Image (cartoon, rainbow over all chains, first blue to last red; front, side, top):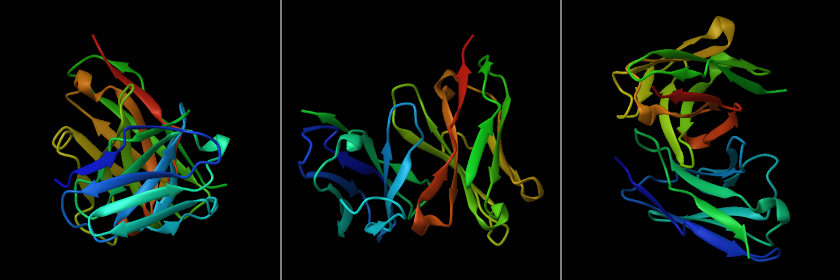
Length: 107
Length: 121
């Protein structure tokens, strides 16, 4: 199975900060990687697909990038509604696997 | 509106069975892959399995943790996805989400609200 290692697990930040979350895949997955945001009690929401494509309706302060097996989600100018847990997911190989999640908390 | 609604979650004893349903609306259900994802209490997301649209074979894929115990099926005439769960274990306790996908490249773009399955004696 392809392991997806997400870091950090927790991140404290303030409104206006730029935050970066990283996922590293144990094998090459091309750009078959997605990012999701989940708030307590809610279903996940797709933010980024194909490593860097912004899902329709998602604010442009969210961006994704890829370099080999390392993938990055960047949130520029963090907004109050962005405090949540973020997950990456590899979709290249079965079983599809999620990273462990990053909880972005208020500093 | 594009929507997915799950149902069927409940309390079940270890070793028991349960069937979850997911009904889609507002889109051409038969065109899409449909997914099951679960989330244990206080835990992260775990992909359970996939139902591909009819153009693809094999029609389903499963996570190792559920293969042989869970069966995914769909009825496109009813815009419905199903998850038949047997030999349930306490570790299967989770909120089960269904989700829609245009294919692996595109991620899971629409999710239901989830249905809670509790496996306990």
